Image 1 (cartoon, rainbow, N blue to C red):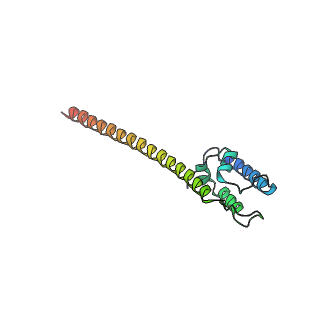
Image 2: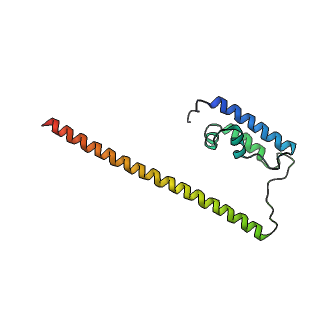
Image 3: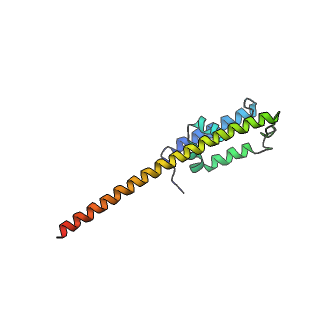
Length: 138
């Protein structure tokens, strides 16, 4: 298991408090839907990756409170008033997915170019080293 970051105690406390706030909002009816991981991370000022990686207990508590039947509130099922509304919503989701795929592909290309450059630099250093060693050996 990966060790927790240095601020883990503070982050865990912030996550616990943020979860309590979200649960309270849902219980009071001030928030119409179940707490989400995005809201939790925003309130606690902790990245989603950190929550998934270092705080599985917090994640389990959040999932427990999101489970259907946990509260008297109905599940978060969507109802569409017309096929047009559903089509529009799906189009928005596709647009967002395409942007996300584009982002990750660009990041992949950037990292690949960096890796290729580093490999070329290492090859040049190895050639220079072997040339220097050969010259010293003469």
